[in-house]
Image (cartoon, rainbow over all chains, first blue to last red; front, side, top):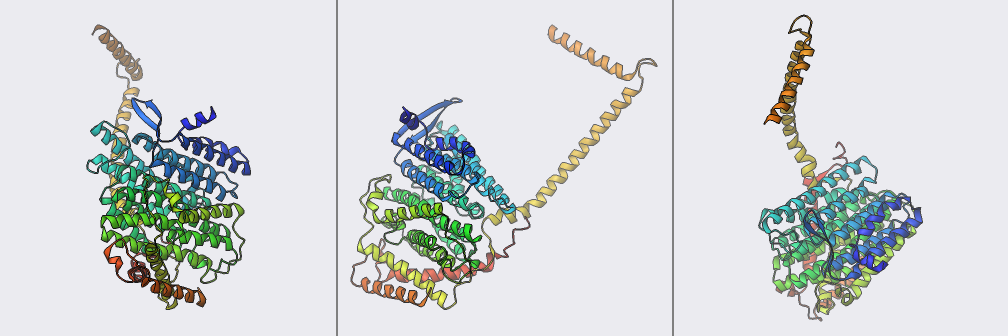
Length: 567
Length: 70
């Protein structure tokens, strides 16, 4: 009975429902309630593939729970991430992070199961309005501003999605969320809506702007869902769209340079996240079964290892109070476990054999090779070396080794260690048992990443990248970590748009003010003439003007009624 | 990283170079089949990335309080 009720409910729904009441649950019990909510939501997945909940609303058939081979792997990893985040945030007594995190994860999971574009829009916006509290909860003026920028961009993406859906409906008469072909304005709007959340080039500013401003727990939670929801949406809507290969290549290449010179470690990870999304976008652009498997596998592995890296830097921030590379170093002494977990995350993202990134990325690289896309292949190969460089080496090196920052701190709280330990185990498990991992992918494949040739090639790539780093360090060519702000595409709306927009705003305001002034003048003129009439006796010395006006008004009303009755 | 770490890395690098001539390595694209291609490519890509980063600093780096007047 209970199980029937759960499987009839869209996954994630219960998480959103329980997110608010947990405010009143005391600290430790709250974490348990959250885990229970996630477990019950995960139980809904046992309903299997199919359309499980359709409702009729305003004449539209809304599909609230559609599950298939593409939504399932995303749903599984979203639940895993949500559960890991509960452990990671166990030390946090304030409810804000937990309420926002649980409802945000729930909204993202519900969005995965939207069968039509309007339902998708609702959860799409819900992820924006829930997650913004993870940034706001930082409580600083800086975070508040970043949160507002984040919200504007995210809501804009939703508005584009809705507008595109409406146009698509008027063209085709269908709101179903299925494969689309770029062409009409409607499909382009939906494509850009997805592109904003997937942090396409030039649309990516919000990611590096907002994520590093969130709370310790908040950044970890944020890193899991929004962008991967967009990857899922692209995989469902635009698989095989050639343009995505070019977009994805740009996404893998450009953030690498920014990551190298960025000082804030959580921002370095945000650039790295962007670069990883590029691999998935390329794979979706290829669109073959192997490539889609690669995109999904990469998203799955990525959520866990990227979360793990953010967790380790969150732990550093929590204990040290900063994640500026220029102020860190030597933490291996005081936070040895965090260091070990960070290195597992670093080796996973760098795609060392036996770690999850290797099992996932190999699929994408092979899919590119089979298609004969040599240029894209070389870009992604270079980006792989770049990933190793900024996420694999820079993050652990500058935080835990390198120049000693002189911080004497405690190891991360127990809950954080549990979450990082579990994530590390998953990274190694996926990397070591790829056959098992591949079984949850959308298409059944016969693929083995562990042939001697492939492993050797990858090891060469990795070891010689590290050698290049040591070479540059040893001979002093490596740029030092500097306290700085590195301009990113958010500069376009934080500076350029402001500079260009201010004169326009002034001009508009000048016209508006003079219009309002003129209106005010007319109003005063009319009012003073009424006043004059009211005080001037116009019908003789005994009847004041006001009485005449009232009488006239009554007469007009009577006449009007009479006219209406007669007519 | 200390001296020993560099030595270990160099040793692994050397082993990989030797393996390159024992294992028949083939890549996903023809170019990758060239001897030591991944090693050479990765090494120069990493240097290129750092050079690119230094160049990017010249045009995109601002003081830490750049946005503080917002």
